[in-house]
Every structure is written in C-alpha cells, then in structure tokens.
Image 1 (cartoon, rainbow, N blue to C red):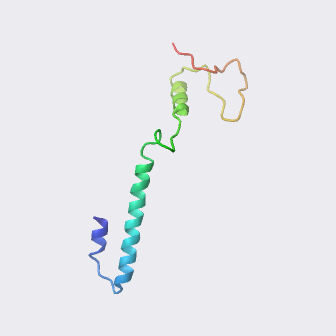
Image 2: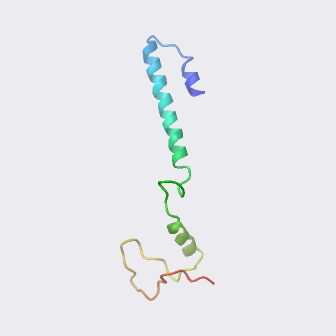
Image 3: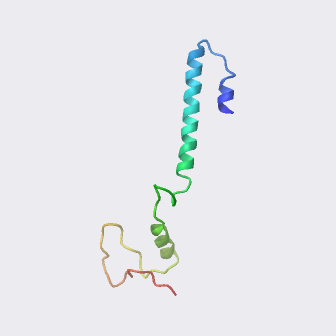
Length: 88
C-alpha cells in the first residue's frame, strides 16, 4: 500500500522517483524478513536457550534459596546458593 501511495506523487525526475520507491520497497521488505526471521527466538538455526528465562522465573517464584551469582562471578557464600532448584 505504501509503495502504491508513493507512485501517486509526481516529481520532475521520474528516475529519482523510481529509485526512492524501490529503496522504500527494499527497506519494507527487509524489515518484514527480519520480523519473520526473529519471530521465533527459541526455534531454528539461531535459537536462543530458554534456560536463563527458566532460572529467572524460578528466582521470582522463590524456588532458589538466593539469587544465582551473575555470569563470571562466584557466589559470595556457596552454601546459600543451591546449584539446582529446590522443587517442592
């Protein structure tokens, strides 16, 4: 619809209008491609693990005794952090 609407405007240079309309179509097409490509982040070749999100949900629900240490850091008191979630 946007590309059709761009064709309704008249400019002095038809070649310039075709170039701008083509670039607009290209940008819209690439954006739609990215939406389709990244629409399912947990599936496909570029999949993201759901483990960090599961840990966050467990922390919010109080499954862990304490919050896990940030990446690359060791816990200050190893006895207070459970390596595995304690499920009821």
